[in-house]
Amino acid sequence: MVSKEEIIKIAKLSNLWIDEEEIEPVREEMAKIIEFAHTINDVVEDGSVEFDNINEIVNAFNEDVVVDSYDREEVLKNREGGENGYFLVRRRA
Image (cartoon, rainbow, N blue to C red):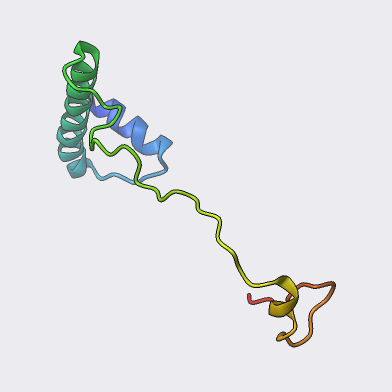
């Protein structure tokens, strides 16, 4: 169990203000969090659960396919302004 002094130290390190009446509920929550972390560690250490690919998805991405596109000059001839064969885009802040 986390001590009262440890809760106060953690609060100071986190730059949090904690009232005297909040210490006990925080201790209980902290104990639950630590217990959960120990449970996770126990499961990982005994190998009862594999976390490599829990969703069994092999590849969720589409294959890259090269397709013919418009000619560069054809696209750039319809632009207003531009420099050195590039579009100029206004900066937005």
